Amino acid sequence: MGGIIDFDTTCPWQLYLFSFLHMLGGLFMFIIDVCKLFTGVSCIESEIVMQRMMALSMVYVGGLYYMLTYHNKDKPAKITRLSNMALNAATALLVSVVFIGNQKYGGFEKSWMHMGDMWTALILVCVLASRVAQKNAEWAETIPIKEGLTPCKMLVLLFTALTLFKFLALADFIDPSKMMAEGLEITAFAAWTWKFITVLVLESNLAMLFTLLFEDESGQELLVKTIIILTLFAAGAIYSTQQYLSDWMGLNGNALWIRLGVMVAVCLAAIVAGRHTGHSREGYESVGK
Image (cartoon, rainbow, N blue to C red; front, side, top):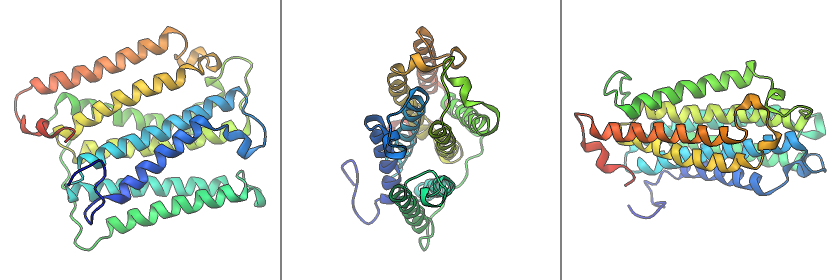
C-alpha cells in the first residue's frame, strides 16, 4: 500500500471518512460565523469562544483518529478495534444531534441543518458498523495495562484518565460561565456548544483508550507525537480569544505559553525516555511508516 490514503479493498475508508468529516467540520467552524446559520446574527463573545473550542475539539478528534488509522492501516485486527471505538463515538454524536432537535418542532437547529447533521451522523454509524460486522473480522487482543509500562504508555494512561475526568466535569460539575471574563453572558447557542464539546471530549477519550488497550510502543509514541502537534495548534487557536476568558481558565497572557511549554516538554521527555529504556526496541522503527 502507498500514498496518504489507500483506496483499495483493504483500505479502512470508514475510519478515514470519520476522521476527515471531523477535521473538515472543525475547519469550517474556524472560518464561518456559525451563529448566523443558527440565529441569523453574528456571534458575541461567549459564542466566539465556544465556537472556537468546538472547532478545535473537532480537529483534535479527527487528527487522533486519522493518525491511528494510518498507523494501523495494514493491521486489520487493530482497525476492527479502532472502528468499534469510532462506532461508539459516532453513536454518541448521532444521539447528541437528536437532542439538539429540529427548530420546526421546538429544537435548536434549522430544519435543513438538522437533517444534514442527522444524515451525516447516521451514515457514519452505518459505515463503521459495516466494518465492525464484516464476516471473519479480526479483533486485536487486549494488552494488559500493567504490561510494558513505558514512559509513553504511562503518559497515555494519564491522558486517558484526564480526558475521562474532563468529560465528567464538563457534563456535571463545571459552570460554563466560569470560563468567561467578568460581565460576559453565556447564551443559548454557547450553552449548546458547550454540551457538544463534551461529546467531542468523549470521542477523544475513546481514541486514547484504544491506544492504551491495543497499541504497542510505536502506537503509543505516535499518539504522544500527535498530541504535541495538536497542542501547538490549540495554543494558536485559543490565543485570539484570550481577552474573553476568565483567569480561572489559566489561559490568559503568559499562562497559555507556560502551559504549552510544560505540555510539550512532558511529551518530549516521555518519548526520549521511552527510546532509552530497556527491552522491545523493535516497535519504534515503524512509527509514522
